[in-house]
Image 1 (cartoon, rainbow, N blue to C red):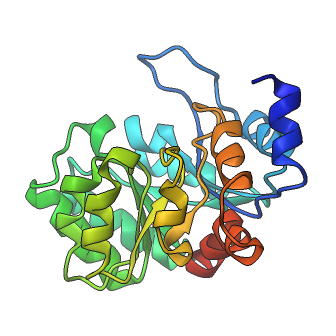
Image 2 (image 1 turned 180 degrees about the horizontal axis):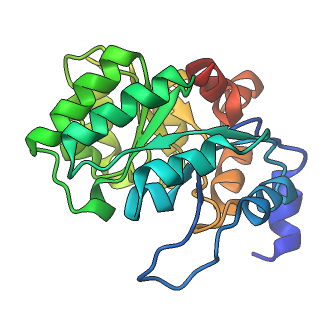
Length: 241
């Protein structure tokens, strides 16, 4: 499919809030530098009006300075904090600070930090985030990472739900009304239509993944116009305020 064909199929679809946006770079991977200006420019070029932005610097190098850089961004960036799951005491201290500054969401990077779902630190941070009313945006395999958040009345968006694992998400989400999933890896023919539309949030992982693919899948889905609008930012704005 050519870029012209993709743009024609996407049409005038706009995303009011992308829930999976990063600034910064991975030190061990080739890729874009991910400056705020370039990232927000990429979003705008694809009809994405705002992004929930988290810092790779906060996730990989220095939590506080990385988060402070995110807090200094202006709209259309919506700041998302990050914590280090390898330091659960410090992570909860940072959650308290972020919540006091008005941040509404925190992003967890378990794969990048080498943390497994069964580690006590993850459950400790999950409890603190739920206590503070923070929305959690988390990476990791949903088949394992649902467990630390179960029974907490937590609002969680699983950013890495693969369509091969969609059945597992649906089973656990049936008992957890706060569980949601990103659309990023739901590219099978009927994946988006299988999930209740109020549990879906558009996510691209700009600039480290291509935003056109989830845009194309959403634009060509069998969802009703009002459902597409909810997935394309309405649900994210409802959760993030």
